[in-house]
Length: 223
Image 1: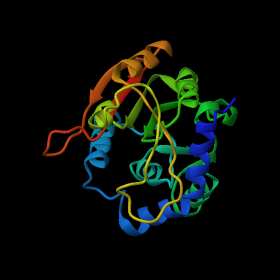
Image 2 (image 1 turned 45 degrees about the vertical axis):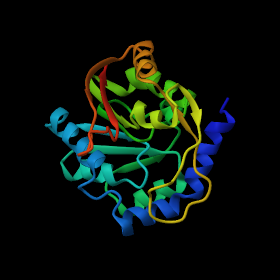
Image 3 (image 1 turned 90 degrees about the vertical axis):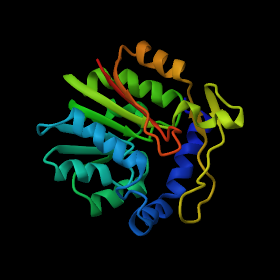
């Protein structure tokens, strides 16, 4: 059963989808130059060279799927938002589906060389269900790359634990309605989640700026 918090995530993203698309198209929030954007692409360059089959889980408006297609890969995107998915279908290259990350098996997508989750693992149970589904989604030599908020992100607020907390749209251009809640994990709990789903952590990056503070964490896991 989907929790009230999980429902709030879905509702917040659907109701703010148009504002998000405007921020991407008009404000350049996906443009090269940001630390997390460039760090993700650098990791992708390290781990994918030959033409591959790629799945972007939580693809949003489809910028990364299109980039993968432009680089010669077969790319598929999945998102829970109908608005974002329709925009991607109409304006981006690639193939797109509406679906929940916790029930990807229902879409019968087949197997992939690379699965990407870029700031898209926001909840609790669906995230665990997603990792449990990876053995069916990944080819034997495949990997999954996850970029998410660094566990230390909330330490200044006295918050370093696994659990739900209030989310925010602060820092993004545009006007948004209610923000989605966040389910944050400590480093230990990320590790336990991977282990519990039979995944091996093979690489880890902590992109940071000139202040030395990590802006995100990138996990690279495989079966």
